[in-house]
Every structure is written in structure tokens, then in C-alpha cells.
Image (cartoon, rainbow, N blue to C red):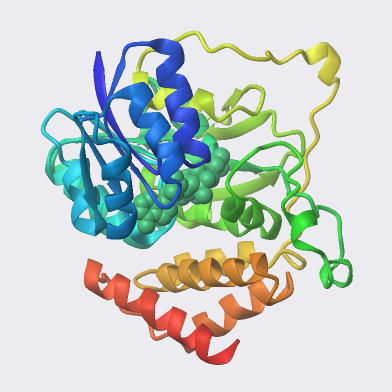
Length: 380
Ligand code: NAD
Ligand code: MG
């Protein structure tokens, strides 16, 4: 029996984590955290009986306390609440399925408390990888990737000497707008951007897949997770999303992980690592699939990717600015306040305006985030 806590339990990764727990029957859910969906959280509490849950706002916490007054569960709120449930003594693995930089502090505190991290919340590594990775090493905890590409790389590295890695090949579907020109992207609608060809995910990451910003964030995530320089991380477009990513070794051998696109696989792999469990679902049928194709990413049209390499190359606080500018821009796009291509423009202007701080602490990271938000609010 493993005991886990899930931050972001009502989201796409969070609900699939609970599906994995439901199907296996031997994961104890000690704690859950969510933002606004109190009704779903209540149902989850009734099914999984956590000892503590966190919701962001005190008012929502009060509502939830009333709704579950018949149960033995502690309801906490705010950042203190998130940290409290992430560091509960019985928790062995913290699943960070929350969206955004709000995940930084709970992740750091959980590592200090000796919890392994099943990491979905890529923003945490993108902005604070220089803090998280050395801390994890010092505290002897494992960072187990949940992102499908990173899980594929993690699986491909099993039993290998990491010194013999030549490069990481991160695959990308190319998103719903693959093959389009910039002109054709000018007036695309939110609905079109939300139609991901292969993966079903939360709204923010689905837009990030359409802009290729998600792939850029994943390059940065890979850099920290696997300790590899940027010039040895290559993005390959593989539109069928069958190859989830690959590792090329110094002898030219390439090892990949393939499968049908289902996030439950990397989630389950992280939770049971190094074991594998049965997972119900479709299997790859190579006869039916017939072909797997490859392309280079179109970095002229989808400038989210080169912008990410630029941010990662500058390092320090710049990836935070890249990430924060994108978060705000995506939110504005989802609220129909800006056009699709404005997302790139906003990220570029925010990065141009920022003076990089090397090796920023958590406070400086959060300050850079706040300053970026302010700049955007004042201009757009
Ligand atoms: P989502 O929007 O579906 O869910 C986000 C969850 O976080 C929800 O439960 C929400 O209630 C919770 N949340 C948001 N703000 C909160 C707050 N202030 N306090 C407490 N909880 C809060 O997002 P998602 O698609 O599940 O993605 C989650 C993370 O996983 C992101 O970092 C994303 O990049 C990463 N990821 C997702 C996928 C995917 O397939 N969805 C794949 C790889 C990585
Ligand atoms: Mg991914």
C-alpha cells in the first residue's frame, strides 16, 4: 500500500490519478487539493476518504467544511493549507497536478519533508528547476516525471548509463494548427485551438500545445530532470503521438517508448516505479496504424518554441518571465481578449523588457512573475 497526496485532484491529471488509484485498489489517498470545484472535491472525499483536503479560498473551504461535516476530514485553505497537506507524515508520494507556479512552494516543502514527487506541474521545474533538483538530491527524494514525454525518456533510460546519452528527442504532435501559415493563424478561434488532435488535457496546456509553448516548457523541464544541455535536446514533430519521446545514445542507438496516447500510463508508471501494472485500454495495432511520420517543427510560424530556447539559454529568472507571460496571455486568449498570435507578441515583449536575475530564490521568482503580470495588465 502506497500513500499519496494529489494537488489539483479535480483537473485532468488529478482525476486520471484517482482513476489509476480506483483501478488498482492499493493506493491510499491521504490528501487532496483543488481550486474551485467544491462539488467534485466533495465526491472525491466521499469515495477516497482522505484525512485532509485543501482548497484555495477560505470561503470555499468553509462551504466544503459544512458539506462534509459528517466525515472525519480536515479542510484547510490557502498556501499554508497546500503545504500542510503536501507534508503530512503518512504521505510517501506527492502528485503535483496543480496548474501554474503555485506548485513551487508545496513541492519544495514536500521534498524537504522527504516525499517523492510525481511531477506533472512542469511550471515548477521550468521556473525553479535550479532549486528543486539540487534539493531533491540533497534530500534523497525522487522526482518521477508524469509528463508523457519525460516519462518516455525516463523509461528509455532504465538501466542505461546516463553518461552515454547523446541527445534527447522530444516528440510533439504539432497541435491542431500544424501546417498552417502565420496568416492563417491570425483569426483562429478559442474552440479551434482547444481541439487537440490526440491528447485530452486541461484548457491551458491544450492552448500551449497549439502554440508549441508546451513543447518549449517541456524542453526546459527535460533539461532539469535529466541534467542535459539545451543543445542536446531536439524537438521532433510526430503527428500521430505514438512515439512519446526517445533517447539517442553515443553509439547511435535510439530507445523510445511507444503506446496509445493515454496519460494514465505515465501517471501509473510514476506511482509504481520501477514496477509496471496492468492498465486497461487500447493497445497499439501496428497493422492498423500503418505509418508513423516525422517533421521538423515550424519555428517560424510557431515561435513559442524558439522563444522557449531563448529563455532557457538566458536562464535565471527569464524562464519565469516566459512562463508567466504565457500564462497570462493564454488566459486572455481563452477570455477572447486577444488573438492567438498576440500570445507570442506578449511573451516576446515581456522577455525583452526583463533584466535577468541569475540564480533567483523563490521570492525573486514570484516577484518576476508578479512584475510580468503587471506589465501585461498595463499594456494589453
Ligand atoms: P487542469 O486545469 O485540468 O487542472 C488543474 C488543477 O489544479 C485543478 O484540480 C484545479 O482545481 C487545481 N488548481 C488550480 N489552481 C489552484 C489553486 N490555487 N489551489 C489549489 N488547486 C488549484 O490542468 P491539467 O491539464 O490537469 O494540468 C495540470 C498540470 O499538469 C499542469 O502543470 C500541466 O502542464 C501538467 N500536465 C498536464 C498534462 C495533461 O494531460 N493534462 C500532461 C502533462 C503535464
Ligand atoms: Mg507532455
